[in-house]
Length: 377
Ligand code: SF4
Ligand code: SF4
Image 1: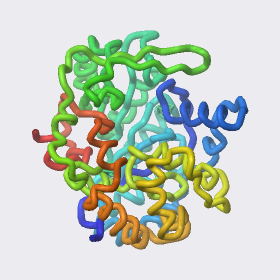
Image 2: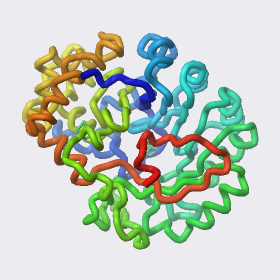
Image 3: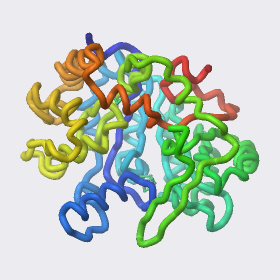
Image 4: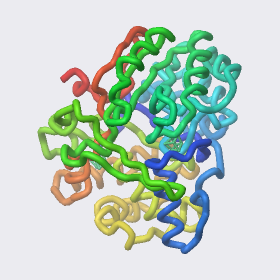
């Protein structure tokens, strides 16, 4: 059955650059594992800081008709990049905003000038930016290591020029006492406030984790005032169609090199399996050893239909990829046959994305999560 219907969210990384180096970031773990594997000491994985998605690419990868027929929300998600660093960022916002209901972007906010943020604010009326400072206290930013003063200055500039913004707080123990301060600040600035629990704590068991970077170890602890995990409780069935980010939440996840992977839960592992391709597109041979279960459950099905290039927008149209055997049949059939341990276990065991716990919506911004009925529970 075709996965495509109306109301999809297109979640797109628009480059591979970031100005920060947060210890919990995928960029850091990706680099660490490359260095271990190749016995190198590189500052960044060689895939990082190599390219930006251009306006021409976006126009050819996501034609106007596809956007109008299937997509209601385009999100620059920043899984391994800071979207504001893409020199075409404003042009991309302008293009998408003409064809979909809402465009959004998540940013560390500690980048570019106030003038640039004002210009961005004027680029489209259906555009929302989520700013993510970690803490409002000096020397307390453990998770996202930005300069909070710069972030707030840029947020204020963006809002002063008419931009719709959300002050977002990923809540840990180290910043849980700042919730009312965050809310007051959002109110003063004239933007929304949203609180999330870090995805590392979505299994109901983990209460802290350590992240080591630049020879320093950071302890990130779960907030102690959220007693249970709402998302975990929401998964009531073992059928992936009732919780899958691809078929249920309808999120189409696109890498900056144009590859469409089924979801962010297997993105890191699929990156490892196809790392050679990410570094050099002429090398399409997968690494079958690195994550054998994910290879068996997902990558082997990609291989059967012709390999990783069949999921790349550089070689296929988005309609063809979303209607390829892998998306149309293979993945969904494995769910029916109960033969896909990754999909049955990965999501159910709680690696769901962050949870919205509390928010103020003074700007009446539509829901950006694509969680359908879950947010109302
Ligand atoms: S700002 Fe985001 S992409 Fe950049 S290092 Fe931090 S977590 Fe990673
Ligand atoms: S792991 Fe499988 S079921 Fe879960 S979101 Fe990804 S594709 Fe869907």
